[in-house]
Length: 303
Ligand code: ATP
Image (tube, helix red, strand yellow):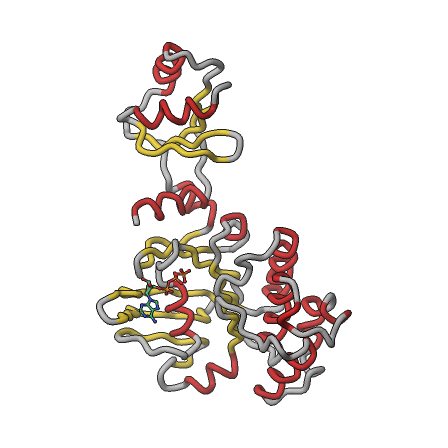
């Protein structure tokens, strides 16, 4: 499998703020690839560089073999980019936005409609509604339709579902899977960990550096063995108590239980007994498998 997106040592500073610090990354062709990291990690800066809107200070990058500096025109014609913020014209209607983007790329609105149809089907019911009056989910579907109008080979999606309701997010991701099946390479950033789990591979980015690239399952498994679930009848006192124990590095609510990150040598059985002598009842602590969300929490706390 060849690589559709390759970056080598990309660095970018804004004044004295380092946004990217030697980012080296390869995204295989046709893959649904996730980029996750806390706010300010550098994701948007990387998208701007890949979409040729911003030049890096150092390093090189190619999209399908085209160089971001030399071949920027060709790159712009072959990618679809959805920026973090709503990028369409709010005063233009649904169909006017689509026509506008089609004309920018010199294609007809029907030329690639097979690609857009699944995304656009719900929007087709109100072609004359102004984009600014659409719901969050519909706005994102329109933005994706516009990003697809010229049949790009690579889609760059910067937090496309932020602020979108859960049902629309689910629909949006189902569409990404369909597009991936059509051979489009997708680099998508997200701060929703259920979405990160849906990627074939994810890169964790923090403070401008790529920490690790792996499948979601293997990344979460990398959290190691010092990871437990804890519960008791009295959940909040349990959380408070565990946080005072020196062998507990971190403890936070996770669904109906607590996730506990411990130091080496943590003994679950003796900890349960200790908590029971403190008056807690029905205490259970057992080894757990971390998720991508746990990794993200760890990253955000390190930051
Ligand atoms: P977010 O999801 O919050 O947008 P991000 O991971 O996309 O975060 P970037 O927007 O790339 O991160 O920002 C990386 C760093 O660069 C941050 O510290 C940010 O404050 C800073 N930064 C971004 N754009 C500029 C700018 N135009 N001028 C100065 N600093 C900037």
